Length: 422
Image (cartoon, rainbow, N blue to C red):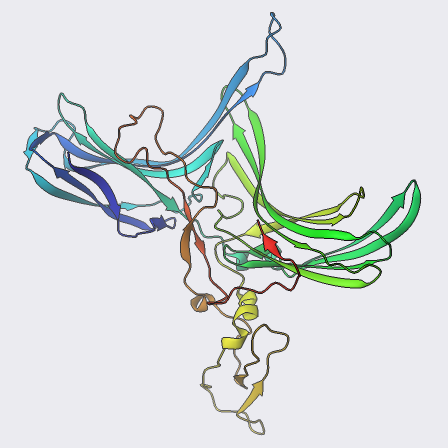
């Protein structure tokens, strides 16, 4: 066999629950092949698995490792593209053969997810059933990106604000204090969007602020049912940004650090009962010397559709109101020019009519997202029972998630000195 592959109608291979997955199986033979059937196996499932040391030693005083696992199946379908299970073998000619397929996805599916302790995975495997010989098989995976509309989550639009009072001591003697306020405009963001974290502080001591750093962390919980119920937790840092000195002592300072959300799966993983996922924003104010840092954590919701009212912050300089569709009210000017205040870039006016327009963009005005591979890299999709020589099985797979470019060609400019990402 010269070539065996599965090709999709979408280059990024990303689909939403309920959509139709279309593609084709392409086979190219160097010599005639006798085939009983060409079958397609489409599967959606989640799996968790890990090993843990026993809590108590055995009679010989040895500790053993026990494997825990859990599994959910969302769908599993078998289709025959050619022939049947008991069909008469047919000799396929030399050259390229194409077998198109269409698969309807169920509605309630969790988003694709990959981790060393578990995954939510959607695969398609094509099998050329050869009588009395090894089958030719190819397997690949595609991404299901379940929509999470932040506009339908009331907690996503809530702003975050916390005030901090911190005292400094040296040899049990108070040497001053610092007050700080951490502000974040909302609690919900999408990949590609920037989380602006503002820290305003007033330092009444001689202890210098060394740096302020923020990080978006992923919190995971896996649930196993075999051989008994067990739970495993894991924490991962997804992206970090920081601001270093100069910081002025005994004065009021304000720093805003922009943290861009990378390609990540949405929060919660709805419809999956064995994997929980949420995100936490960690803000740390570090001081010189041996003084302890001040740390705060805030829950952040990561979605796939951004808050509509948040788009005003990015598109204010590019908005032009359409002409009114109703007569103007008497005594009012037809238009007025409004200059945007405190917005990055040049001050460009936009026209506002007195017609009643919505106060924020709608879903039709969202820029189309790109689909980028998850920042955690790729993993093998080969099952334990499958041959490593299967076509495509050894090619690592990484889910892709929608990433929005809400800033045009320009990147958001940090307002903090010494800003950087890691």
